[in-house]
Image (cartoon, rainbow over all chains, first blue to last red; front, top):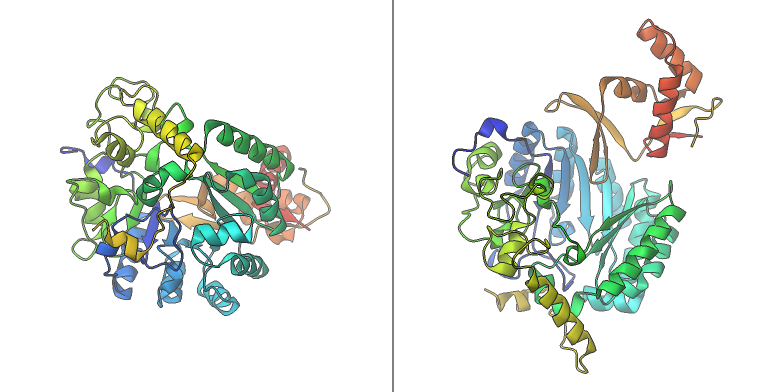
Length: 375
Length: 90
């Protein structure tokens, strides 16, 4: 906050370039904002080139091309080439939809380091239902092609109530596809996932069973396939160390050029998030109100302020505190020390009640028509 | 995992070893991750370029630093590197 000495700032290491909000898929747990349709403008190629150059100069080294679906950007190969020349390690985070062998080769030649393909489920029927688009067969082809052309292949599967029972099959599918890494990302309940939480949040028993299966498989494939397990924070006693601390490591640039300390931060009130069209990355990182807002520990309220674990988790996630308690300064309510922790218990109870109800309400799919309802 | 003495050691084609000016150190980059290396680890890994066996690598480093008795340390580090997938043999 005010008075925070910029010489104490660590430089950004991770740059997430959300190239576009356009996406052929409609996943109901999408991390893009609910009202993304409000931001149709996209940065130009020149803007992105400048952002990449400036962030690299400060020390950013991991670069994620994300979205939306980054493949919808015509200049993706050009941006990848620029990133490689600057010395970034470039990750393409894609649904795989529309990815051809020709494009895979072209991106490799441009210097892309890694392709992460998402798959929604281990069966075609469920994958295509969750994605809102027939994509399962193509995604598996893409996974093979990614391997064939020498990329490390990361398969990402978002886990929720509709697919958590497939854990064993998902693990076997990943091994069969030759994944070098499998990311089992338990849904984080923001944005679209929050809107669909009653339909997506599994029970504690389902989580524990799925985690047991994943841990056992981890040992089986040790040395062959690495498994990253993103924890379901609603069932943890302590919050996640969100973003490794605000403004310490991560820099997200949204499609319209807004710079964010985390990809959900544009939902927080009063941050006045800066735009790369107006300021340099250096100015944004060191001097902007948004990036200094939750730096350090001065902003913390009790029970965080006097907590001996505040160095570990930084009070948890600001976006979750705001979303679930209405006050972004509060302790992340997933923490069992939070005076608001009952909102988590209530969310779990509500989801369980909906799961047992005779008529399930339908999922709200992520698309422009639904997004406009939130504008 | 142990280092086989008769086989060439190569750096993993799915990892990248590079000098980071901002951090003033060598790092290993891989999907969504980074490992920072100290000077000696970096010196060892730079020689894992598909042209040397373990003994050749040890000899070269001992000559470079005009010392002996590095064998155990180098072997132990390379086993860690092999386990982490940074290097390979075959």
